[in-house]
Image (cartoon, rainbow, N blue to C red; front, top):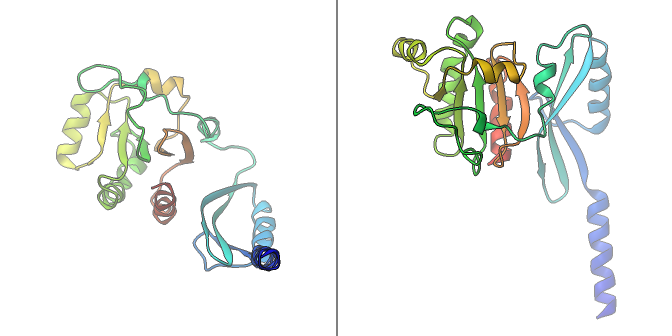
Length: 219
């Protein structure tokens, strides 16, 4: 019996040792660690490196990391203040619903959440609306999709009559937006099932594939 156990443990150790790490960088095909490290070096040449681990998939003999590498300008990142909230719980209870009552602090629990900060006269905000509607339809019932705006309810209602925006809308929120120090629009947050901020994006027109990878990992 001991001999069998030793053989099993040796086999298990060999399998673990044999596991390899692969990286899908910015949506490309899986590559090895050397290619990944070189990609990071090249990215740094163009600015400050921002690396996002979107998702990790464990397989029998390998691990695949979905990674996004970006060069942030050395002089300015419009989302720097918002990124400080990564790892903290989004305080939905500071916002009010259509009945002018504060949301329960557990309102977002149980599902991943996509929160879009926008306003009706923001061209890049408007540009991404059709893609956001498709994203919501794709994950309908599996995730929360919310917009937050400093516009009043009438302004939002009049706008979505002309261009449907199929999220739950939280309006009249200038005070809360200012408290969060959000000044770049659109700003998009992705929260996990416990309401913890995991990712901060600007306009997501070219990032939908990354968003899908993130949601598939959070579900």
